[in-house]
Image 1 (cartoon, rainbow, N blue to C red):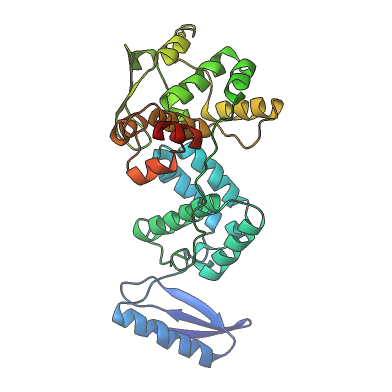
Image 2 (cartoon, rainbow, N blue to C red; image 1 turned 180 degrees about the vertical axis):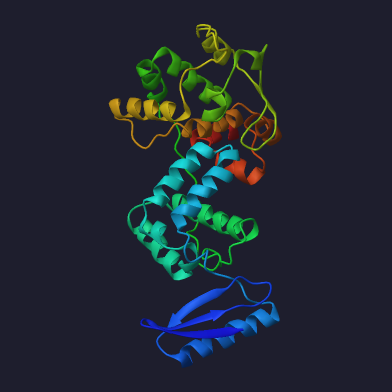
Length: 320
């Protein structure tokens, strides 16, 4: 039942109904208050009322902080997601209540982000994070919000990278590398293992010519064969007390590779491109699709194709 109290600031309307918390709102006139009370009580009677106060007082930043504590911490990519969350927390939208952010707001954010030079892939990942946050907020936190990402256009997936090592680049990089980074680069080229898989290697994971990766990005175990070159490079590593092969972090490895390329004036080459290089070399060696797929750990042929860029000259040679 609604009660109305006259205050200096206007008319305070209070609604008390069994099964619901008391809700209050102040209006300029009693007519406005009665209209609002009628609408709310009608929704309560139909079981359609949702208390939006928490959603309208909890900011996106507060939800992002909770999401990182409760959700991100359990993900394999929690470190990368930490940086993505930190970037969102610095955005102006982070200060808005989660229940007040509309699709229009996210569409404007998308357009501004693309205009600033961010790649379509990066923007898609940023939007996916917020979309998943809203899904968790609705399904697990009980917030009566609408996911603003659902109805906006997503940037089209970026063109698959086709960067491979040019003649002489591999030798230049290996000559520039520290002894430990040299082994890391050789492993990336010889095995197509991901950066995190290489950095996380331990002595006990290598038996003979096989590396057993117990928990990969795809959530499955994978066995990777080692070439003679890869085994030779591994034999150069000193023994570590902690059992690990390398002292680098994922981020540290990437940063060092970037520095080497800058010193050598090698442009548009990323550490992850070495996985493309390795995958393409496997096919050039004559391995079939299923053999390569078992080594690289790609879940689908379509994804494997994005990592395969054989040199045209090599294809011409095979044709005879």
